[in-house]
Image (cartoon, rainbow, N blue to C red; front, side, top):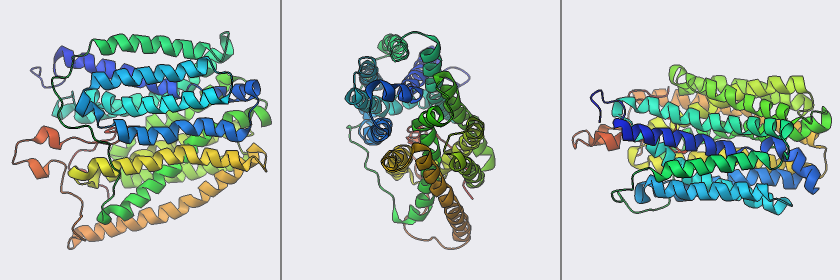
Length: 448
C-alpha cells in the first residue's frame, strides 16, 4: 500500500486499469447487435419472435452464469476467470461474424451471456477489492459507471460502423475481436494467484423471511426499470425502421446509447437522494417514459426520443435505488444469496418482456405489441409506488419498536466482526448488478 492509502501501489493501479478496460470492452460487445437486428431480420428472413428470442438469450443465460461464475474469482483467481471470459466473448463475436442464420445468432448471444457471468465478479474484484478501505465507495461508483458506459457505447459504435464502414455485419465484431486480443495481453500480465481463498461453489439465491416484503418491492421496481431498457434495446430499432422509416443504424444506435447515458448520469444521485426517494422519483420517470412509448409504440422518432430520456433517468434512479436498498439491509453472511436473487429479477425484466412482444407479433403489428406492453408496464408502476410507500412506512415503525423477527437487518456491514479485526473482509459487498458489488453504500447510510 502506498503512503496515502489510496491504491495499493503501481501493480494495483495496473490491475484496476485492466479491469476497467475489460469491463468496457465486454459490455460494449454484448450490446453491439442491438442496432443491427433489423439488418439481421432482413438478411436471414426470420420473424419477430426469433429476433426477440435472440436478444433475450443473453439476459436469460447471464443470470445463471453469474450465479455459477460469480464466486470463481475468489477460488481460482481473477486471471484464470478473465481468460475464460475473454475466450467466451471472442466465441460470441465469431458467431456473429460468421452468422448465416438465426442459430448462429442464438449461439453468439449465449456465449456473450457466459462471458458476462465470468467477467463480472473478476473485474469488480480487481476494481473494488484492490482499493483501500477509504476509497472503496469511489471504486464501486467507478465499476458501476464502467459497466453501464460499456453498455451505452456498444450500440453507438455498432450503429456508426454499420452505417459508415463497409461490411456492416462484420466490421463491428472484427473491431471487438481486436480489442479482446489486446485484453488477453493485459490479462496475461496480471500476477498469478498465490492460492485459493475458498472452494468454488455457485451462489444459491435465497431471501430470508424477514426481508421478503422489502425484497419483493425492490425486485418489482428493478424489473420495471429493466423492462423499459430492454424494450429499447430489443425492439425499438425495428419499430422505428418499419413505422418511421428510420433505417440508419447510427441513429438507432445513438438513441439506445441515450437511454443508458441518462441512466449512468443519474445513478450517482442515488447516494444523495437516498434509495427510497430515488426509487420514487425513478418510478415516476419510468411511468412517463412508458406512457410515451405506449402512445406511439416507438413509431415516432421525436416522441421516442423523449421516452428514451425519461426511461433512462427512471432506469438509473430505480435500478440503483432498488439495489442499494437491498444491499443496505442484507445481513453480511447472506448478502450474496439475497442480491443474486435480486438480479435474477433484473435480468428477467431485461429479457422476458421482449419475448412477450415477440409472441404478441403473431397476432399484432410490433408497434401495437410495444404499445400494449408499455401500457401494462406503466399501469404496474402505481402499484409498486404504493407498495414502496407502505414498506417505507412499515420500516420506520419497526425501527421505533421491537425487532420484527429473527431475520432483521444487520446493524452494519462491519458490526459483526469489528472485534476480530477483519474489517477489510466485512466491508465487502456482493452485488451482481449490472454485476456483483457494483452498488455500495457507506455502513451508516440506511434507506428510509
